[in-house]
Length: 248
Image (tube, rainbow, N blue to C red):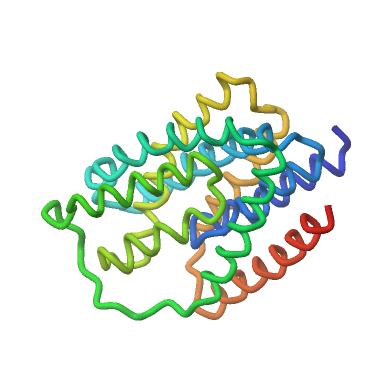
């Protein structure tokens, strides 16, 4: 690995970790970078999980020190997501590189469009056990399948379920999202490891950046204007990556 490649992994990791904790879309930067650096698609998909797990550990540690609550409810929601992630990771290992790349392009384009939609202002309220209906558990299973398969843009799905359906405030959504992703990403990473689809040197450098970005995201209190700036920067980078993928 060349020095500039290592620097790129850390730099994109910082941005991806920051975005993943506060919003969604970090893997839309990290996964294509791993592919551009020459990793086969399945290896890139597995290697990205190293950063996802470690950045989530970093973010959860900081959230808990900051007084995050409802950890038990997050773990309940994680159970169907874990089952789904194992299904999704297994499916990812069955598809060809060409099909996976086509799916990546499609989900990146779809996620970018969803990020452009305005977020409605809802009357939010704390989550309680009785609101965890079978529909919510089924949605968590579906998110787990998707996250285990590709992870890209999974934060958008969490916002739909946790914010729009359960009407949890966005600050709490971030805590729930990060903890659930951590729990379901561990078995998904284990499956990629079992099939020797993880390049640790790349994953750990990306994770170094991601953990730093996650730490910054928890510490920084983003203003609405600042959050929009990050969002549009992400979309510009996603557009450039999509163009590069489409050009082969």
